[in-house]
Length: 114
Image (cartoon, rainbow, N blue to C red):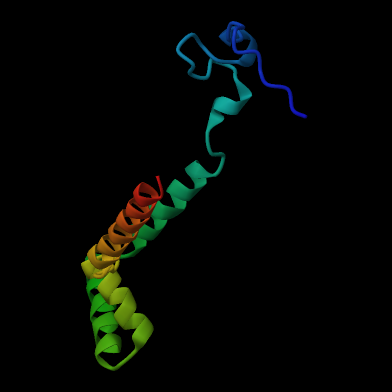
């Protein structure tokens, strides 16, 4: 059986867990350094963005359109997702109305049983 934490005790002092008064990581806290790979990822992203010119993006976009027109389903899906956004389920309202009707049935059945 697990023991419940003592709800009446005061919270631990922030100085002992490496946090400052507002709960933020304090200076020297080894866990406050953030993502160790973020700097490298930013450097690589900058290299890629520097290497790809506007004309390259236009050429790639035209190729994607041509592939989609040619019947390439993954290219079509990529093109639509990038330009139109993710697909939205059109039957959402129908499903909600169906669920509401079932809830009403259950509530009516419970009311009749009382």
